[in-house]
Amino acid sequence: MFTLNVNGRRLQVDVEPDTPLLWVLRDTVGLVGTRFGCGAGLCGACTVHLDGVATRTCVLPVEAVGEARITTIEGLSPDNAHPVQQAWAEIDVPQCGYCQSGQIMAAAALLAENPAPSDAEIDAAMTNICRCGTYARIRRGIHRAAEIRAGKA
Image 1 (cartoon, rainbow, N blue to C red):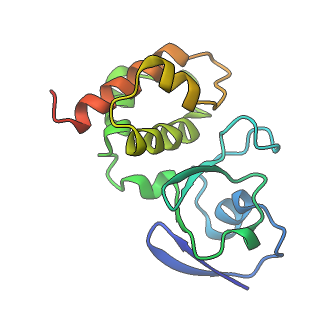
Image 2: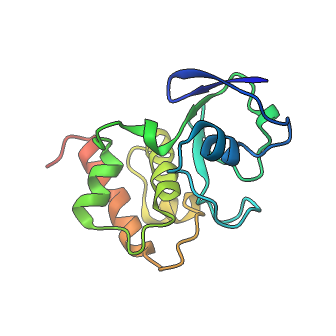
């Protein structure tokens, strides 16, 4: 039995210690916004925040989470008011949308650490894979989210 802090709620989950956090969130907790992509921690579709740090959950055993605060796409902003979510909608960033919850979580963590990243900093930080190739729109979305955070209309 593990106690997790998910989106500000303490939850008890009865799973095996080596169960990847992704499956605990999706199958046990019922938060399906975090997606399965590669299962090897490479694509980033499974990205959530652990204590504010973008973390890939498909290879992270639940026993390694400890007391960390887990924030999923559902907990980033209940009303989709986070600057990244606003920018994504405004610019129409996604194409198919499958990877976008992971992209949004990675972008939000980047902006929390670097509120005005350059293109090079975005490219270095955003290692998530988008099969549709919307990288230019993702970059524009991150720049727009930085403007929204800074209060620029």
